Each structure stands twice: as structure tokens, then as C-alpha cells.
Image (cartoon, rainbow, N blue to C red; front, side, top):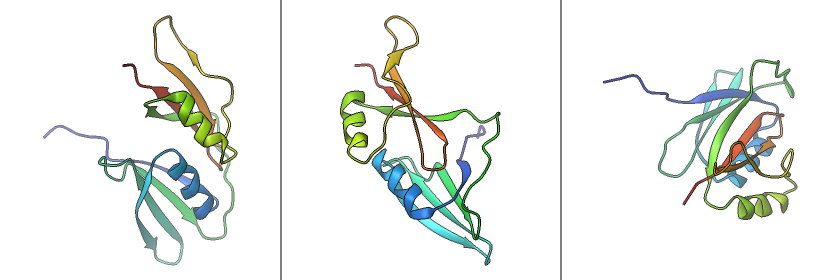
Length: 126
């Protein structure tokens, strides 16, 4: 069997705040796993896709330096305008209005999660 990407993990400063953000994007909490008395892993996934996002909360740490190497993860949207309207109701706004990288290409935009991680929203083309 060929290799497959199982999940992406990043560290978060507040579980409830991060779970609420990713739920607003359509993710579901799949489970939580304590790591001794050091941390809690929260597993999030899009419906039917498994736990592709692992959020690690380390007890006593409420923020992290993101560095310059990380850029983003990408999530599809059936209707980007409707998705942005729903996010706006929760106080989540895009970095800039939706745009296309090339003529005829998908519309996209970026939002940031509560810890500053960038999420690219890409509208599915019909």
C-alpha cells in the first residue's frame, strides 16, 4: 500500500477557542487524547474524512511563535460567499476579499485561526 498523509498537527493556546473556530469551518471534533499530565490532543476532521487535524494543547502554554516556514492548510468551500457570511457572524474575517490566482481559476481567500494559523478557503468549481 502506498504512503498516505494521515494528519497535520499544530499547537494551540486554548482548546475551546480553537475547536469553535474549526467547527465554524465545518470540522467536527473526533476525539481527545490526554498525553500524561503534559498535554491534550484534540482530533478534528471534516465529515467522512477522519481525523486529519490534530490540535495539541500543552498545559500552561497559551501562545506560540509561528515562525516563517509555515504557510497554511487549505479547505474547500461549496459557496465561498456563504461560507464567509457564516464566518463573519462569528467574527472571523478574511485577510482580503476573495480572488482568483489565474483567470478562470477557483476563487479563494485566507482566514486565520485563533492562534494565527492561516487557512485557505478554496471555492469548488462547478
